[in-house]
Length: 169
Image (cartoon, rainbow, N blue to C red; front, side, top):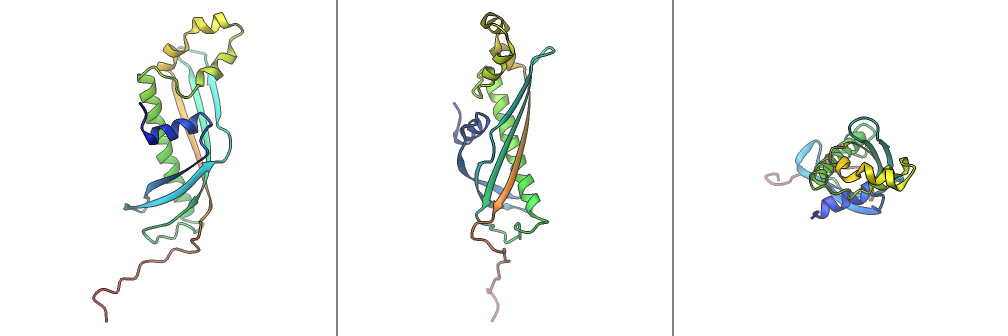
């Protein structure tokens, strides 16, 4: 069984993800979170090479999203810090995908439907069946790449630090 987060990652890899809300740890202040509204930017790209002793699968997912809030008050809307947040989210999704692929390989389950793409490389159904995709998928090398771009900062114009008045007159 897949949990909710794993299901969303599976949908991204299957090109069925439309939109979702994610919260990631703030890259500069990990005790706080940054919520993002994320959607697919383009269709996934999958390249499968069947040469050698194991299949090599290259998966590229392109996402875009909106910054909803910043608890820490750090100005992630700036040109200098926006890439920091984008890279943090890319790494968050890539780590999740890598863990999910490993889990599915251990369970001998191609939930990503890579087999449908691999089957196109065989001239007959008999050759495809002889290849035994599920046993080959178990030992496949899966390379994931995630590209994420923040398009809008929502209602945030500029983050401001929180001013504490406690102890002041």
